Image (cartoon, rainbow, N blue to C red; front, side):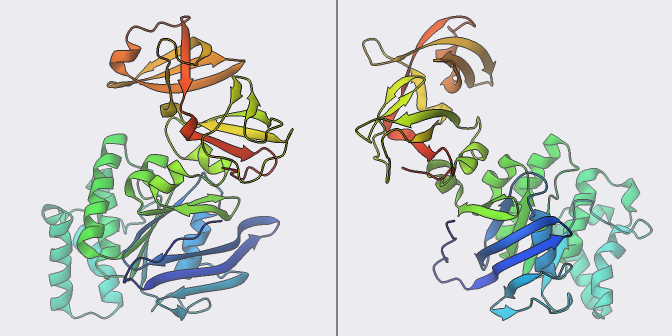
Length: 368
């Protein structure tokens, strides 16, 4: 597993060291370790049931870990009470108080902390202005749109000025347009407040467009931590390669040739420009090629014969699925290039040898 590198001049806002939690026979998180620099937007990414919510709840103090430690600002808070951690959490369901108007939903956590009335009024109005909700302060949650409810839930957390803001799939209940708008709003708020954000999502687009660093999770553990570019260009595991990038990486079986530098594949012999760290003749591997690294071959260029299976126009680009050597591959072409292609056509394709990824077939670990 690769670890996040500390940012220049930043302290560590949060550190988890070998945290594990089980519920009966279900392993929610296992041996989880990572650190987040102050002011970072850090994303926990993976499908349902990989341990994202349990991780957030453990950080917040809602769930005590079976083992391991949680540090916030260098202080061990593993068994500390929820209050005093400097943590605020926004849940997927928003969890607004239906009988209170927006003003009182904002004010509630401050009243619980016995904040002075004048300070409450000041911070409620400041928060409402930032979130563009000033005109809705007297409205009840039931009369708000989904986007407005989401902003109220955010505001109720932001008003406490937490050191760390935890967001558990906060955009799941919004439609596509609102999700797009709210992603931009969250990034703006992150820059404005400068707080540390831990954001859990199963949505690849959310992870890549919002996260400064992303932890790709699987079965309660972290497979790789990196920037969006690092995860896309240098996945350390076939699992990461299959989750990051849209369309996802083409993966197919192959075997190492006698020279330990080239591979027998359904597409013929492939020779990656980057040598493998370790490769033994006859060893089973997975070859990975991004759709953007396959193109139509130029005349006279070494090419692989294929047949066009499906065209998916997406405006300025088209995803073209081709069958080659019994494998279905996807490539991304400019719309102008794909315009002359038809389903059933023969197509000669070329693969960028500098962008071939090789993974161990048994372990899934990257070999290049």
